[in-house]
Length: 398
Image (cartoon, rainbow, N blue to C red; front, side, top):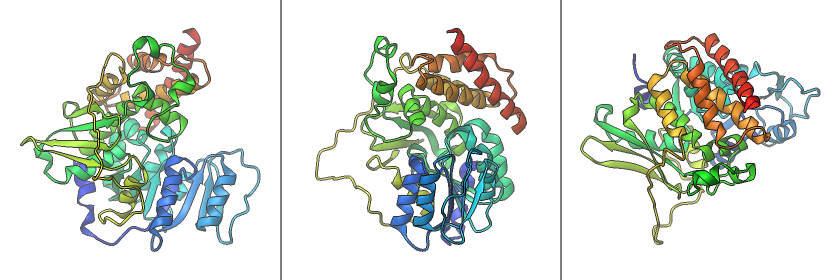
């Protein structure tokens, strides 16, 4: 089977820009940043459709500012039609994420729905032959092989939006797949980079949400604190770049300027650097293979830069080891760990689970599940529900 890496890197044979955009998850941090990018790019880039879960007021403001052809509210608790501009269709219900992802006028789908809720629409976009600007890492974590099959079936392309995978995507093109010795994903280390295990055992919700570098949603911020986000990125990298687990490493970089690196067989290391601003990888995904002038902050090379690279302490951050384990086994493991983590983060934010228990319960649930090396989508969804329920049961007993 052709690798995902080959597919996304050979798709620029047709240089015509893909400028008709749908944003799935338009009111979240990635969606908001994407709207900023679209405003900066101007014509011919335009917003065709946008979705939100329940933030109807914010979605209405987006619709009146950008005048898309369609907006979708995925919550079924939307009881009234928002005041939309003329010609803007309104759809309500989670199934309409797929409607938007497959819309015939859309050529690029920005998949920014957090968690496994964004899986079906991402698969639909891939099967429909869209450019999938993927910010939802869970789509690959849960169903990497199915996503790969969907991309092949629909002749779609996938451009990563995560800053780390965008960096790898950019750096990796300087060589050939056979020449890659390893990729190095950088991690900020989150708010607990220097905390001891004793301190971590007493970490509060406020502590965990105080990210020193990035402004993100609550769930992603907690994932950064546990470093589960990096575990998920390890799994995502396996599918994006068709790499075995022993070629995927992680290093802590507190400044979040080196977004990731590729080391080649001759010892050369190619890195992508920029200020920590998600609008840059988003713009690159929208305009690829072009690079277009942006108004975003640039590095000032007339000033000294302190760029630290620190080894990960696996004892304090066991999520990294868990990520390697899941990456190595594949199959149903990603779906189980992702679902357990989503449930565990909800429980932590509700005050029903301690910080260190988040990764612990993910490991326990992984060990208990019925592994399948080649699952279909219904079984993955069944395991998703099972893992969430088992996580809640575990939390109630601990």
